[in-house]
Each structure stands twice: as structure tokens, then as C-alpha cells.
Image (tube, rainbow, N blue to C red; front, side, top):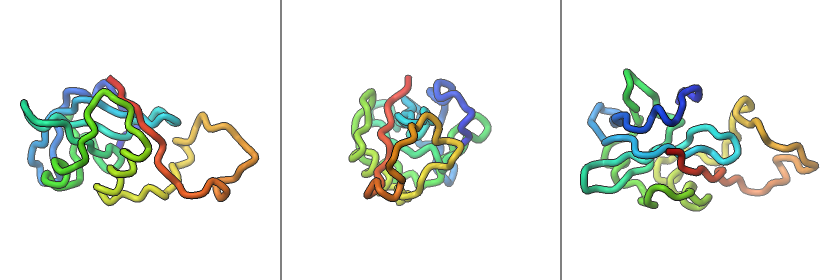
Length: 137
């Protein structure tokens, strides 16, 4: 997704699946703790229904709406963790698996700012887990 978009400008926008079917309205945006980059959005799927978490990385902003490249049924079946809370690494991993996204890929170099240099190399870190995002209202 375009990383130069202010996450506050995403809230309230309509979200559509890959076929153009309306999913709902963006309720919250979750930022990566380490980079501050918008990573997940919680989509209010209806007046009395829950929020569905969607990944922002493969999604794109098209004509003022968020286009999510997944089927509506998959999006509505995403794990429900409630909104307004920090996503744990385990919850984020569940979301990555739900959408079939690769969690082992390192972030692009231009998004890895703010990381402190240490004696450890990335090869010494062990299994990779996603950085925990937090909500942005």
C-alpha cells in the first residue's frame, strides 16, 4: 500500500474486496510498532457485526476507497480480536496465516528505520515473527 498516506485519512473510508463487493468501513488502522507504518485495518462489516482485520500491504487506495485483494468471504472469516487493543505477535501471526501472507520476509530497507544496531545479525535472531502493530485512531 502507499506508505505516504496518513492513517487517520483511512478511517471512515469504504473498503471493497477484489471483486468490488463492499466489505464495510475502515474503523481503525494499526501501525507497526517498530516502523510506524500502517500495517492492518479493522473494517466494520455492518451495523451490528464485528470488525474484520485486513492487511494493508497488498491492499491499495483506489479513488478514495480501500481495495483489498481477497474474497469477501475470506475477509469476513478473519480472526476477530476486537478493536481498540494492541495486537499481540501471536494474533498478528494468525492474521498472516489466515490471508496466506509470508511472515518470514524481512521488511524493505527503506521501512526499517529506527532500528538500533546490535552485535547480533539477523541470522542469529531465530524464527521470524511479525512486529506487533498497535491501533491508531
